[in-house]
Amino acid sequence: MNFALILLILLVVTGALYAVDHLKFRKLRGKDAKEPLWVEWGASFFPVILIVFVLRSFLFEPFKIPSGSMIPTLLVGDFILVNKFTYGIRLPVINKKVISINDPQRGDVLVFRYPEDPSLDYIKRVVGLPGDTVAYQNKRLTINGQAVDAKRDGDYLHSGRIYYSEQFVEKLGDSVHRYLNDSDAPAFIPDATRFPYRENCTYNAAGVICKVPPGHYFMMGDNRDNSRDSRVWGFVPEDNIVGKAFFVWLNFSDLGRIGAFK
Image (cartoon, rainbow, N blue to C red; front, side):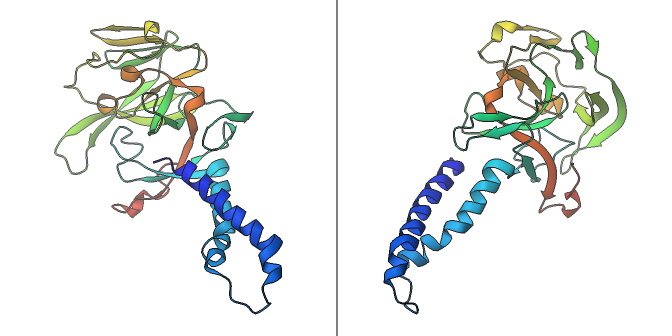
């Protein structure tokens, strides 16, 4: 469901009713006359819808984490806020950038439109910028020939499951975060698709090496062996970016998660 489009349609319809009522019919009604239903249930909602539309389209948008691909940073059931103006101002619905402010940096956690189905929103971490050579070989990340700093930090016990993953602390750009590896998972990528610029990637028994094309980003989940990301379906075009995730504001299963990611 394209909620942004639905919200825009509601804004246009209620705005038209609001304008017609204020410019014409309100003057014809008596001061104490009861408002007709089309005003009470239509035009009166316009200010509320306008506020929601502006906030959601240009400032902040809430999202719910549906999968475990970003564990341990984000958990299933986390409700997060996404800053939609960090990287620039985009037109609602078509997501076209009209004012550029900043560019995504390595380590940023982004919400973006899934390249294979833009009706879906995905969330991953930026690993490779345009022009970078990203190598993920034997579960070690290298960017432009430099190994990314990572140190072992014990084991992570998955909630509701009886198994552990190896946990590491990684410094990627200015971001210091944790990620997971499963020692028994294979290093090679078994299900890579035929994505645009696939010729920029080399797959082997140790993993994948990719040259990020201009205007695109290489994304990975923090739960490295349980994330379908750029290693599988390719690069994220700049036009697909929705915004930068920055805050957990609710998790019904664990209220202690509020503010856990910021």
